Image (cartoon, helix red, strand yellow):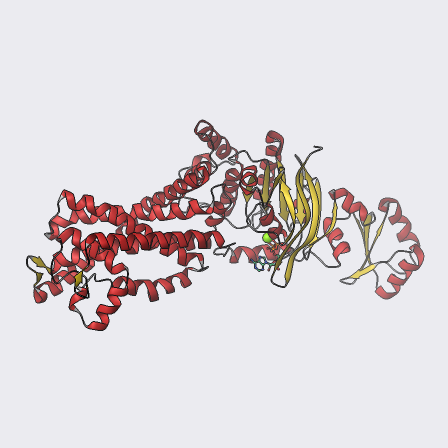
Length: 261
Length: 324
Ligand SMILES: Nc1ncnc2c1ncn2[C@@H]1O[C@H](COP(=O)(O)OP(=O)(O)OP(=O)(O)O)[C@@H](O)[C@H]1O
Ligand SMILES: [Mg+2]
């Protein structure tokens, strides 16, 4: 047990050390969501107008972009595993008396903390973008972000457990995971799109993570939530869905990583 | 010295159909420098990986510092330090950060940690560069840092997989100075693999491994003696007749290599003048040499350990990126 705890914190510590050492990563992780907000906001804001009473396109998209930033930055846990394997450092970790479960948890927690740091940076931008921010929003946001980030880093590590090369990993992420993130209702309200797209989005569990964050910012509003056969999914239900998913993904990552020679 | 720190019993590892390590058995005593000498693909790294718990044996077993490598992995891991064939440093951290990570991972007590880091970095002459990013280090500096890291948690056994591969002779010499000093200072057991025959000379005992099997195990001198004394090499215009004459006169089986005839005799110093005076064929060149491990290898396996300098360079080219 002490080995798992020690493993978790040393691995997480090193992930954070690297995040801080690599300024380019901090910048690029911020630049992307910002670009989306500024360009899409300016481009579509005028045409689309408000999506619900008092909710313009930026206000609608901002929580989605926050969610997207969390999801993509969590996947970095997997990138980091593949990276370490490729450059050899994984052996230093694997042969240390720390246990594989600790390694997985450490990578996941490292990615979660970097995800939280990004969320904080984006929250600082909120007033500039005209998005309303209250203390209760922030307090509710943090646990949701943590749950989502742990789950998605579990997914990243799970995929990484089966991959040997950076290229293979990138391929899986680009063909499978990015579409899931794009189809999670970051840019559009899933109740207001053609049926086929709505079905895909509602089957996609990430949709509930994105909507949970949106509900925290905007409250439950008609037209922008997720409706399944007449029932608008509540925040509590969404938290249940993403918690279950996160436990499943992180658990599978631990099993897969332990199993690999 | 009486106690064995490594015991290996019919250890085996297969990769599909390939038998990488074929039922090897040996022991290493405490405080010993034990060398594993063999060409590319002989099974050296595979053996080390099994001893350091990174790879499950397909058969047989081993203990390190009294702990079973399959059932007591944590205890084994705490007992050993490792320097892998390819670098396993985090290049994006500084030298100091790499060492600190290692200290945390091995639960080195806080009051021991900083003095130990200082002591080791000073020893490998990297104290001045401790805040430097490892990415900016030369190959030799990285190796030295890895050796320092491998020793940080006071291991009982240091495994070195080709510790000086691809390094220039001065740096190799330098690293060996450290290692031998350390062995004195910390009563360390050193297990090393190498393809460099001159490097194996530093070992108290050498196991020669070829195609997954140990073909000989002895002290360097013992190995050289085992192939029958000194080596005489000579050339003559008619090698066939030369071979026949050696065979007939001395009852020795000579070998022909690159147009020169080679054979082993005891007491070569006394033998040579007599040989030159009485040999029936004209002699063009003749030389006497003490047997090298190269000769030992050739005699035992029937092939050369290959051009290891060339291999080393090729390996280095490929080792920028690698897969576990
Ligand atoms: N993971 C693996 N999967 C399949 N085959 C492997 C694996 N690891 C090693 N081998 C094979 O096992 C044999 C022994 O390899 P090993 O790495 O132990 O050799 P080595 O003696 O360390 O060689 P070198 O001097 O080149 O480092 C080789 O034929 C190699 O191809
Ligand atoms: Mg090897």
